[in-house]
Image 1 (cartoon, rainbow, N blue to C red):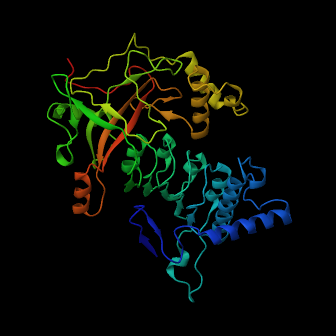
Image 2: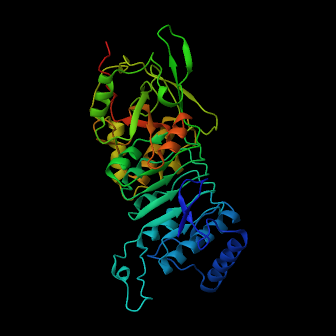
Amino acid sequence: MFTRNLDSGVWMSSDGLTESVDGDTVQEICAAAEELAAVNGNVEQVDATTTVQSLPPEDMSERASWACAEKIILDCLETGNEMVDLTDLGIRSLPSSLVAPLRYLTKHPQLDAVPPSQEAYSPLVPSVKLFLSRNQLRHVPSAIFNLDNLTVLSLRNNNLLELPWAIGRMLNLIELNVGGNKLRCLPWEILNLLNTGRLNVLSTHPNPFFEPYLVSAQGKETKEFERGAALLASVSEPPQSQRDIIKQQTPSVPSNTEYLAGSMVTFFNPDGSHHRASPIFNASHQQDTVERLRVAPHDYRPIAPSTINTTPSLIELALQSCTRATRLPDLSEYVPQDRSSSLFRLTHELDASREYGPRSCAICDRDYVLARTEWVEWRDCLPFGNMEQSLMQLAHGKYRVPFLRRGCSWRCVPTYPDAK
């Protein structure tokens, strides 16, 4: 039996399966895990995955959190429990090797009744529900995006700076909760899940999302978007022709997401550095303060800083070759940790592509490693359910969500048909 947790916005377990693990239970689990490790010299694993004993934790508290998480996961694998509750364990980073065994979770047949009920002969494919709420995660482990049977994912109340584009692969995801983090925007791939996948519950607030602001024809900054139905002021209200073009560019966008506005385009050099002639914004800023972005007027026409060449650069081709190399070491460990250097940016993007897989251009759908263009689009993501409650929340701007789009070349930019 499940009940609605009003704070989290996702279905949580009832008293039979508590929402989180209390302090006494955590201590018991950790003590059992340490006792098992002392007796066997290891912790039992599925499919020869890396054990907690071989992981490099930063301190003993992190080690204890991993031991608790591993014990819970192993118990779920043994009992066929689809509810994997890792809530409130103080996890700062979660190794993919701990999550990966959930791919092999199988429901146990219910043979208690005599004669067996029809449910006993139903498919044993599980609907995994993973709860990682109220931890301290800064990154989502890549193994989560390989869980084909994951239907509920709660990442509420962590320290996430961004969500990987790999979330677009989770076509069986029904509920996603990312509220209470430090997200500036969401990846564009989430919108595809609303159309091609099964996602119908998307909880995104609170987060320090990019806030749009308008500039009048006289060059004066106006107030923020009016809430409710008048989110776009008349000075920047795009004509219907522009909205039609946007829908043609993104045919996979579901009908329950209404386009509101878009930012101006940022252009990047072949080495991934920002081109000085274009606006800049930081989609993964570590501050909790809200950053405001200027809305592009309806006649805005993105113009590349120089001649457009759609051929991938030598740097891009080299990075793509590195992502396909199976024995290539982690290059980021061998470069200076200077975030302003081009080498640091290149290795960072390379590591992300190797961990989460290739990402596709938002315009031409071509795979790439280094983005050459970037912009934000605000959309109203109207939820399903109680219409009166939805309208009340919409009136407070709750469903105005920014989505980050990236292009693989300077030609891959949004088209504004009324540009002069």
